[in-house]
Image (cartoon, rainbow, N blue to C red):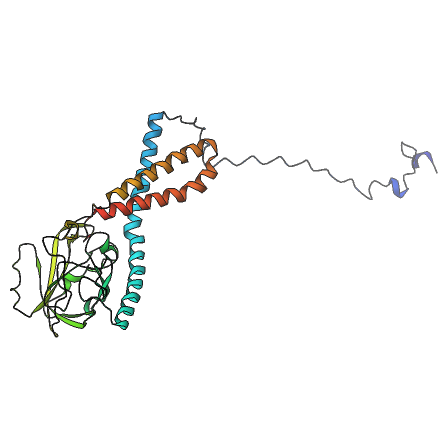
Length: 334
């Protein structure tokens, strides 16, 4: 081996470990520069400092919240809960009246079989109007609370099918609106009403409003029924609509009536509210105020989460109670 065969470091240039041409050195790639961050879609908004309300503004905010809750509860009470309540009550009244007919103790006067005055809301008849798809239990009494259950029979008039005039009041929109479409009845249309004296068929004479001429007076031994409801936009009555119908089947004798036109309570007349239960509205408002005061105390001392869990159902219950009593003050044909 000559000196030329040795590299500068003293290794044999023919040695495989020193053969540079056999395995060229790998090129080291420089690391990729980091990608620039994506710009945000929206520029971040600067954080607003918390707004501190004065006691006066806090009171106004609380008042608006309570008023909004009451308004929502009123709409739910009339539009949703009232419809459900009407449907359920009609089912219960239908079962009760059917049982009375099977036992032969259906009411034929203002008292029951034991000569006890019928309470408001007692079933007295079953009315079916095939043309309008109406099948309703008629109850005794016509104040605002009673007509929530169904069409009401005015106490100072005969029962349907008996000698004389029978007046039945029904709501036009709220609580099922059973008489919403009776203005579509035309002369000659027939419908039936079942009472404790049997089934009675009536034929429509005509429709009339305030100021229109009344039908001819009854002759002795005749029977007529007047279906009465509100006229105008739903939930905003402008008058009264009446459908007159004469009895086309056999007339039945009139039952004993203790109430007459002079002694009929004002709340049982057309488009009247019931103020006899105004004291219940006072208690309902007091309950709502107490709930709100306790809720404010709990929000500050217990925490918002537990306050919402406990007091939201109580507030809804109080609001429904208040609005339910308010509805009693509204017209009975609403």
